[in-house]
Image: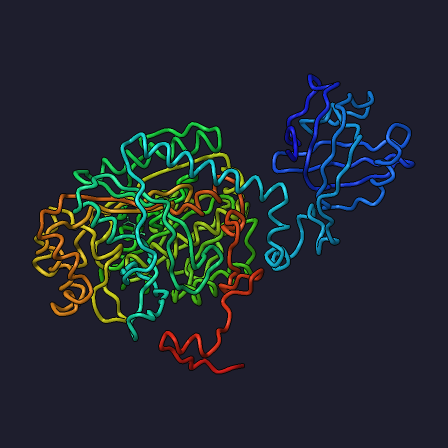
Length: 594
Ligand code: ASP
């Protein structure tokens, strides 16, 4: 037996007991020949003392101990000397007087101090097994486990079955590039790693399993932004004979349970619902952060008769003019900064500019456009949007409604950052459902319609005539996203379960009859054998854990993540492989060695 207890268990009540502990040396201090170590295991720390006068041999051996050596000690639990207790440590009232010491393994000097929070991330990733020894990383992984456990318990209680689906699978259109795996046994053919188990979970409904879930690994070959990983984990759910409201109730219940068990907070459910159109109109985002107002206000009415040609022509052409009022931002934004913001919206969103009015306390309106406004327009503006001294107004004006909303939505978030609104509202947990997303969007690059969610999403019953009439842009989907504080936690939809409708949807997406058979024949066929009405959802587990732990990146809540170039710095994957190995799978690399 390596130990009788762990390093976070001994208290005053245990004084006098003989115990054996095992773990790593967290710190070592030499106080005039008496060696103190903090022994660490997964559960915590215990102070161990080596006293030369009581156990001379063991004490002598303790002089050779170094940080991160793995040892086993046996000794008696004693009270710490009065005044040397450590109230910050659960075991802070006691120490163990070592009478036996066994070095289980020596450690080299670690490449970085494990308790230094400022160590460069590449180094941490290279020695991830050391990084994972640190208290914050252990805490994150424990919380992740709690969240997954709460998920499994809750869904099991609700009658859901955990079913695994293949990793070597078929391409599924979730909007990203597939990772491909060449088949040795079928030369020239490839598996795709699942971007999501979408088709399998639907096929499990056709199979009559009714309530499925999976803690599913998904793979998407995308350019990695700050918060993405090529492989990530989803809480994947699908059920039969359910409405959108049923799925939303289920997932709200799951989140209540997760937040209760992992964070100890009660979140109110049901969550409010907001349509996509409202979310865009009011917050300029399909994942609105509703913790603060600063809502977008429509000003088209004010400029209907305007002498300001730019606004007037937009209104005349059926375009949109909106604004937000950044209350109290005037003292925080200089002219130069406003110029920079304008550059930012131009380069990032292709906007033509960012019109503003700045009203410094005790000052005049400063603005490149205000000279074109009439007095009644100015008065209407002030009244409509509550513009006052100290504020900055930002305008969005364009022929395209979505473009105006998006730009102002991003400006709103930037203002919130500037005004400290995220910090001020850090304790709030604003959950909501965004519903009634558009089913289809026109992709100018591809020159055809694409599915906003995925091609299996159901159109709203009342919008099916629009689909039939070819008014694709107006069709809404029975799709929903769950949002927390401006972050999309996940989304899903009620699905198409009729063969004809699914086929029609593929037609609209430009997948012709032949391609439908090749790519989706299995699903279309399955739908002709009595597919039940069904729907589902998927939540991004990594992001959820990140939000609950308060970590700044999903890499902090994944045991072995890739860096932002998709590289595992510890194992160096991806690696080059021998040409013979490639030959076996009928592959020849065309990559140029650089
Ligand atoms: N398959 C979708 C996704 O991964 C989720 C769903 O529709 O259930 O985003």
